[in-house]
Structure formats: structure tokens, C-alpha cells
Length: 166
Image 1 (tube, rainbow, N blue to C red):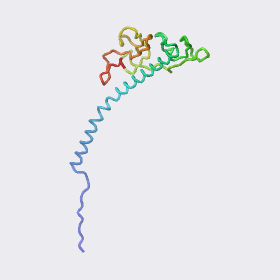
Image 2: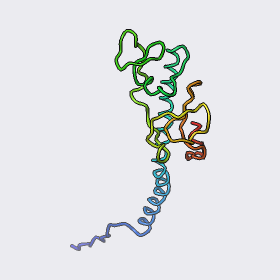
Image 3: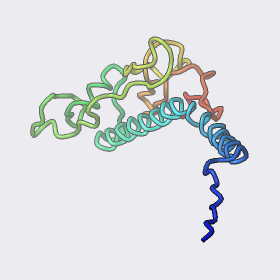
Image 4: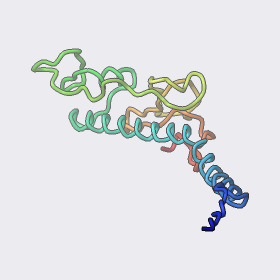
């Protein structure tokens, strides 16, 4: 009996197959790396939008419960984070007189900006002047209840929108 030798073929990847895999990985990397590098910036932009929405909702609710009056600039933090009465006087405990609020647990901090801005939760007078002119977190107009980020108008997000117009 003649035994036929089976032709053994060495199993492995050809050079062409390896080149194709490397090219595919490079294409995926070219797509993913720019998106990942904008991740931190995108997160800050989202945090800014969320914080402003939270502040604006709290201010609107305060005004609806206080006959259309918004918190005074000097006491806005206290009026939003403690219990209030009809006149806007504050108390740290709820009672039969202090029945409204609190509207926020804490005032959110500004997620962007330089020293004196980023991480600040204070309010700056927004009834006059320009946002970003003095340190603080939020540019607040106590007459209208408008609140924006207290940042220089030249600071913009990745879409070219100024942060102080969010």
C-alpha cells in the first residue's frame, strides 16, 4: 500500500491579511481619538447646561411661590438653599411660617473658567456690567431672574457658542 503524504500547509496569516488588519485598526483609531480628546470639554459643556437649567428652574419656582419676586442678590444663595416664608425671609428649619423651599441642596459650581471663576458658586450682579468682569460663578440679575455663566464673552465651546449665552 502506498501511503500518500498529505500536503501539509502551514496555518498562519499572510502579509496581506496582516496589512488589512493594521489599516482597519488605524482607521478606527483616526475616528475615535479626536472624539475621545473632546470628551472632557464635552462633559464640561453638558455640566454647564445642566447646572444652568437647575438654577433657572429653582429661580422660577422661587418666583412663582413669592408673587413673582426673585431672590435678592445679597441673599440668593440662602433663599435658594433654606426654607422661606411669603416675604422671602429664611430659616434653616421648616415650620408653619417657613413653608417654601429649599429649592436647591447647594448652589452648583461653575464647571469652566480660570482662577476665581471655575469652581465658584457665588453670584455676581448681572443687572449691569459685563459677565466675566469680576470673579464669581454666576452672573445673576435679581430683577429679571436671568442667570448665565459669569465668563468672558470670548470663551466659547467647541461649537463656537459663548458660554455666557447658554
